Image 1 (cartoon, rainbow over the protein chains, first blue to last red):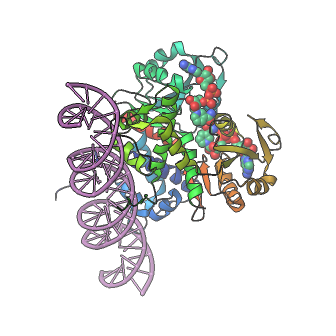
Image 2: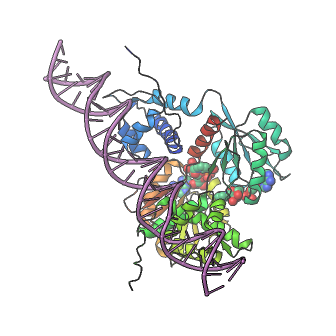
Image 3: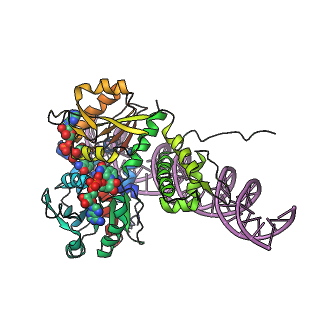
Length: 215
Length: 215
DNA sequence: TTAACAATGTTATTTATTTCACAAATAATA
DNA sequence: TATTATTTGTGAAATAAATAACATTGTTAA
Ligand SMILES: NC(=O)c1ccc[n+]([C@@H]2O[C@H](COP(=O)([O-])OP(=O)(O)OC[C@H]3O[C@@H](n4cnc5c(N)ncnc54)[C@H](O)[C@@H]3O)[C@@H](O)[C@H]2O)c1
Ligand SMILES: NC(=O)c1ccc[n+]([C@@H]2O[C@H](COP(=O)([O-])OP(=O)(O)OC[C@H]3O[C@@H](n4cnc5c(N)ncnc54)[C@H](O)[C@@H]3O)[C@@H](O)[C@H]2O)c1
């Protein structure tokens, strides 16, 4: 009898990846709450999406649930983890240890063991050698060497807007493949480098607009 | 001769609203740089979208450009402003004056005169009456009264995850119509209340995933 | 043991969003 | 003044995403 040919969607969408990360968080909470099994509709409720959406997203992971019992919480959690995290441990750096940078360092510390912020950087001598949540702040002069040595693939940019492009060029030169950018500027990057824009000002404007519409 | 019937899209999408906010920022920068006119393709370059996208988005604003000359920078800037901001000045509050809350208070101070953070709140006695960038932190016991009195429509939530739903219920009860939520939980809100989720952990996972794919 | 059930995995359908394409318009040029 | 070049505004087409539908299947309970 012919095996079912394994033909995975070669390019899961950004939205699917984001939701998988969300499902993983929900599964973690379910596990902590003592659940052994869950259904697509339960996960959907927690994540704020539809059950059909959950099942469709899970197709890319290739984890099979059981009719009637649903998904095994721990198994699905680990399966999504493998899919999102890959085999080797990933590392990130943060550039710009200001108000936001410090908050982020504090927040992410120990939160995702599979994706650790291994170093921070700033060009202000006052900040250098300070340690925030066991993450040391280095001089910008070290950044290329550390990114290369530690095989860092991801950078978090929290420098002022007019410094962001310069910093971007440096980290890409050093080998970074993806950037989470908090500065309110559209970064120019070569093809193959992924940029995620976290635009709080735009987000707040959006909320204000829809708050007003719906009154 | 019959006038062109003015039939505006009754419900511009979230994406369109977000991009309009972005275009406004780009126009501000163009104006500061001394530009008087701009083209859809120029704005598109700055915003990181296509020219067709820009023109389509601008349809909802109802501002007419000129063939050959493009858009008058100042005029379009103001027109988008009127569309996004509405007539009356809007107000926001922030709940949770911790690491992230303080960074946000500092960041938004004076940035958007049309949408001001008028008060902050915390339940930690240590934080109460502290002033961050001229924004005072009040006790949670005052929140209902201040939101009602100041006609606050928007709330920024930066409390720990397990407090976020409780805080949400309070601000909605007090009259808030829209929430920008930084806590990693899906908030339950009644119909008509708009929630924008700022999920940094999911965003970082996403970057890490695509960093890895594209190497 | 078997029948009924309820949830899955996946295809089909619908809906939303983006891109294309081009007539209309207007500033610049000859 | 006529002509040319170029950009706008907007339907039509294409693409992407979400939802619905349902055959399949493991589980439960009679
Ligand atoms: N604070 C917020 O909540 C917030 C919100 C949204 C966006 N942002 C954006 O995030 C960025 C940082 O904001 P912030 O409030 O933390 O600002 P900040 O001024 O407190 O911090 C910026 C830090 O970057 C460092 N820096 C400047 N130039 C540098 C360079 N070339 N190389 C390395 N380090 C450099 C500075 O020394 C400083 O420590 C800004 O682009 C801001 O627009 C901040
Ligand atoms: N720090 C970050 O960069 C970051 C990034 C992403 C998400 N977040 C999320 O943002 C939230 C805040 O993060 P943080 O790092 O600033 O935490 P924090 O602990 O520094 O600050 C939380 C603040 O909320 C206050 N608070 C707690 N319960 C409250 C209540 N019921 N009413 C009013 N105030 C209350 C606390 O007193 C404290 O001042 C958390 O949900 C966190 O998960 C933070």
